[in-house]
Amino acid sequence: MSPVHAALAAISYLLVKHALADFILQTDRIFRQKGHYGAPGGLWHALIHILLTAPVFLLFPGGGPGLAALLLAAEFVLHYHIDWLKEQIVKREGWSPKDKFFWWALGIDQLLHGLTYVAILWFWLPSG
Image (cartoon, rainbow, N blue to C red; front, top):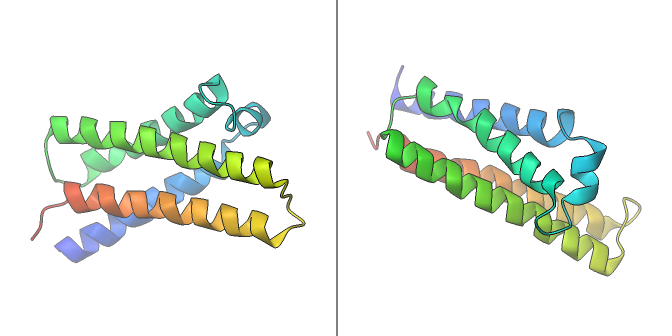
């Protein structure tokens, strides 16, 4: 597999896993607790994400175990705080799905998660 094809396959894997973790596997408890700093639901949600990200390091050759652990830790911290911050802003502003700014916040949240995956692969995959 060429490096370009490996990168496309890896980002495809991460985007599908993101959809699964953020929408299919998200429970009401997770949804309700993501805006409460340190609550188990938000922490569990970030853990689900990194557990589903981990296989990318086995499927696609790149750095070693230490780098994989560092990237997973970074994803955990970033994912948790992106979700928490979005929830804080939406709650503070009183936005609901009826408001366009709610959708802007959700879209920016999803964009930041996608860019996190690009960064993970930037550091993980060989430069060529």
